[in-house]
Picture 1 (cartoon, each protein chain N blue to C red):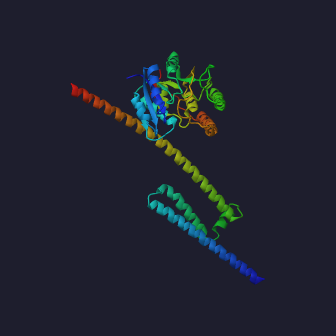
Picture 2: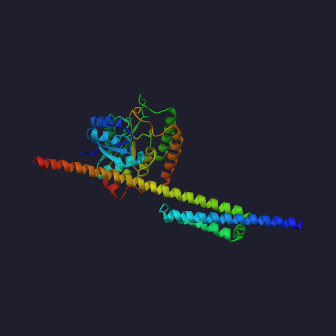
Picture 3: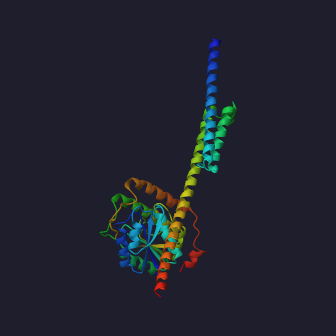
Length: 246
Length: 141
């Protein structure tokens, strides 16, 4: 059994899921692949099983945050040491996984590594101008709140160690979790780091955030982040978090 | 002149009586409806109580002439109807907030239930696969 787990949340991604799994297995063979089928109405779960992944099928659509958390609970229960989130739609390039792992291992103080589209100028897919404006706003706010340079807080391409796995298994935001998760990790005093990656235009499906929902997304995340900043977060001193800490 | 006044007073009194009867009828129907929903197990007792209470309050106000006027006078509202509207509005707002809390809790609970179910389902399936594999190995041996 491997010590590394790739968590792949997927909702109706039957066309892309097999390719994503194959890419992960090719680029990062030391990773077990766990697909979290978030109540898909198509054959995503069957396609993932055929492609050789383990599959956890949620009985109905619970949203990407709860789906990803399900993966972290699995990782915690099966004692994985590193977990990486890779979207099932092919946006994230699994060939970047070894670089994320190297960054995570490079510094023992770093517990969370995010793949960022905005560190280097590249040819990769970087979203529409309006969305980039929103992302830039979140980046400023999150950078201020965490006192760290965060360029891509909406990236779901994340890798974390045992400490992060235990934290996210117990507490993970629901609706649009990426921005909140970074702030959450910081409020538990977990140091985060970013690695430059290039993302691809999704091969299938559409973004969960349509233009009409963008404003709701913006306001919801702003509320969640400010509430999260005011919430009291017990530091990972007693309990399994400190046991797992290096 | 006095006859006309008396007639007017009589008419308005009749209207007031009709209104009271209508309000009493509404309160009784509301009470019966909520009771019936509980009887059919469509509505849980804990959420029915507040509606039954509202119906009873409405009934008491309709039967006890002058209570509303007295109460609104006590809190300094000149028009009893305004007092009733204000109280009803606050009641509805508080109830809506209560329901938002209930929905939030239910969402959280259903999320956790879904996660546990999915993880258990995966575990059972993987154990079944392991068992059939080891059974196959024993069969070969």
